[in-house]
Each structure stands twice: as C-alpha cells, then as structure tokens.
Length: 318
Image 1 (tube, rainbow, N blue to C red):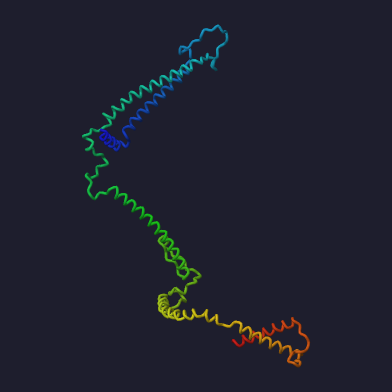
Image 2 (cartoon, rainbow, N blue to C red):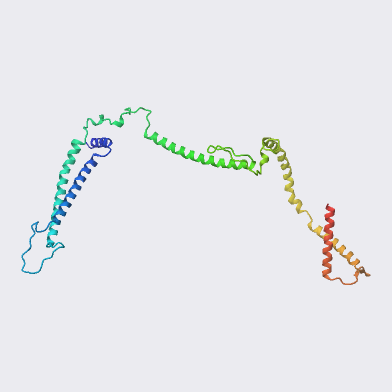
C-alpha cells in the first residue's frame, strides 16, 4: 500500500509540479492566518470599547477618592484589559484546536478521494510531456551512464580546446617575434586581416632568402652544407682528443725555473757592462773596483735592463 501511494504521489507531483501535501498545507496555513487576523481584530475591538459597555461597573467603595481616568476622561479599569487578553487567548486556542481537528479530517479525505489515482489506473496514465516518447525504450536509447560519460567527455574537450587556444596564442606571439628578427612582416591573424608592418631593424635578416641584400642561396642549402661538414668535424675532434689528454703531462715536464735563471744571468751581465761604462774598472784579482753604487741605482738599472730585455724578446718573437 505504501509503495502504491508513493508512486501515486510521484505521478501527481509530476503532473501538478508540486506535492499534494504541500497544497493541503497551504490551505491550512491560509485558514490559520485568517483566524489570527480575526482574533487580532476582536482584541482591538474589545480594547477600544468602554469597559462599562462590556459590563464592567464601579465597585462600591466608602473611599471618597477620585478614580483613575484616561486622557479622554473615561474611568480606567485595569482588570478589564487583563480579562480581555485572557479571553482572547482562550478564544484563539479554541479556534486553533478546532481547525486542527477538522483539517486533519479534511487532509485525510482529500488525499484518499480527491488527490489520488486508482491503483489499477496509475500504470496506464500518460502525461502530456511523455507524448513523444516511445515505450518501451529502444536498445539504442541513451542511459544515465552514457549521458554522464558524454558530459565528462564534453568537459574534457572544453578543457583541451581552451589549452589549445592558449598554445595557439603563445605560438602566434613567438612567430611574430621570429618574423621581426628576420625582417619579415607577420602574417595576418584570424582576428585581424591586416599584417604587421615590416620592422626597421632585423638582426637576423640574412636568414631570409627573399629579402633585398640577402644571400642568393636559401637557408636549406646552408643547412645541408653544415650537416655535410659534421663527419669531418667529428673526425677532427676524435683526432684532437688524445693530444688534449697528453697536454697536462707535457706541461708538467716544462722547466719553468730554467728560464728565470737564464734571465737572471742576462740581467747580471748587462748590469756589469753598464757599471763599467760609468767608470767602474776592474782591479787585480778579477774584482770590480771604483766608486760604490747605491742600492736604488742598482734597482733602477735592473728595471731598465729588464725592459730592454723584454723589448728584445718581443722583437725576436716577431
């Protein structure tokens, strides 16, 4: 019974675009709102009526004091307002209980006899938006799994398309930069039919075969010639590698101190010759005699001789 009621509720919900129970709830809420407005109107009317008209009378009192009055001069009865509010609350509670009891019966009757479809008729009901459907569905009809797969495929295709557009824009910018380097105008794009102007300065304009002043042979010929020279370069590198490996051992065998010793002997001989030319002779015994030469003069002479010797060596090398 519960399953049949669920299928009927689903059928009615699909037909009305809202559940049957929500319709009954709206009716009950509307009636409750009317009750609340009526109770509020009754309370306002009772409070605005004079207490004497409602049956409230002055209590007999031996006290000669003047009773309290409102702004209009009417005698104020504090107990009248409390009794009116209590009575209105009781009336509201009574009306709510009565409405709940009666509309519970109304809900049960409506769901069983009005908003319902007979159990034997429900499987044969065909709504208007099912008019173009062929039942039972053919084997080639899409299933929820196939629709989900197509949706995922569409999402991945959109992602790929966006990535390709970004790559295309980056490649277009790169080609534009390369064309400016070789001195060629950039080809027109799909968004702009006009090509970019020819750049004024092109550092790699010699690579363009059809430009004015460019070499007559095309770039492909130069590339083929370069590729043809690669075997000879490989052979030359293979020949030089053993010689390059032997260079450190040959450098270790060089006598760097021998050259310095020969230079010292050369400088010593030149210094002695210059000293003799300045009046310093030789005494017996093979020792130099004459005036004493200061250390600063000797150092200056050594510097001059060294400069002369370096100049002589440069001349010999040339």
